[in-house]
Image 1: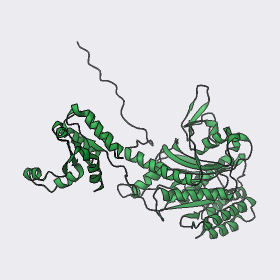
Image 2 (image 1 turned 180 degrees about the horizontal axis):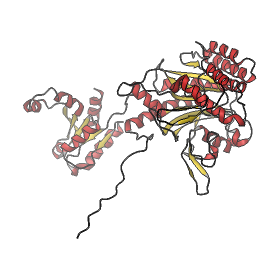
Image 3 (image 1 turned 30 degrees about the vertical axis):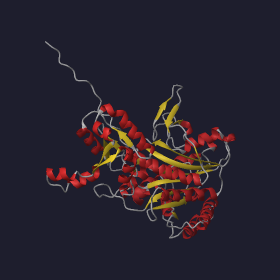
Image 4 (image 1 turned 135 degrees about the vertical axis):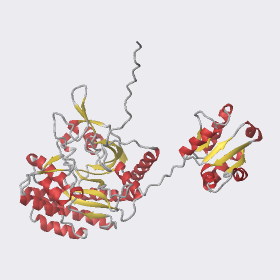
Length: 494
């Protein structure tokens, strides 16, 4: 009896949730967004840096909750020397490690920009990925509000550079010192002992736009269960402390000056709170001097930033326009970027104060939002398609391609298999506009045929018979071989 032939065990083609494949259009658009941001950073005198994707877990910062197995919120593994390594959570902590490692050789302030993928082991959702591209700029060794104001202005200029229009975005600024003062007066000490509780408070407020005041109130108290049944432990503040924190989040006025006045009344005699108010006032002075009004940069006390390493001014870039998915349902994108002052991050390595401030935006999230806004344009034209009518003429076809590329146009010689009909089907799937055809007879006459496939498809809709099609020969022209490049340019221009 013959044995049944076993089927090969093939893996199922699938990708993990929260990780995206990037098609050509997405990849090119991301590159344009990054290039636009880099141009702003360059104009402001910043220099590029690239750090590795992996860092030792203890170098990434205090947000790691479990030192024995530090993979909550990050993707981690043990190195062959039994040390924990983690994929970078952001680009700021690796920068702090780089500066600490090269401190004596760097001019201070050290001003750098960088773009690259970061990784977060969190629940994915609309516009929220586990791998996404960030684009950062930072000043390390830069004390004072002038450096913070510069970061805020660059954040606004980057949004304009990538193509967002007035009224579509706003940079919203707060100061972590203000909340520190309120928490301290509410019984949460500004010390290591209160660090975990303070971080829970910050992350609760950071969810205000998604959960509303009731959801945040639950997270400031005992905790909250979401729709999926996942339970998040709360900060366990008392009733008076919860009231004070929620009151702080709604202290914003109609303008920057009014907000500062409201905050001065709220913080009372708290030295830390008053210092935060003065820093906001200094930032406002610089913003007003360059004509950057509240429509672009506002002071908003609900902005706290969820990471624990911020020590002073913090800010986020918010989209102001309504965004809907393909079915017309509203989509909550939230913050597309932000930053602030983090004076203690480099100090973790060196044991001495190193002031720093920075800005970061999520390229993938911004791209997702702009796609839903319909603000993306595909500026890359498809290549000119050179068909292979006669394989003995491949050298001639590649010669044509080189001439076309030398003139600054994209060109592709068909290297697959199949007759002209199959090649035209391929060209249609690629969105090709112009196709070049040449056989032995055309070569002997010094001619080539150019087909405008897009125009031909449009004209074909109005043609009702074969006779009409043959007589019209739509969107097709025969040109001299020596005039090929010029004819292609003219057709593309028209």
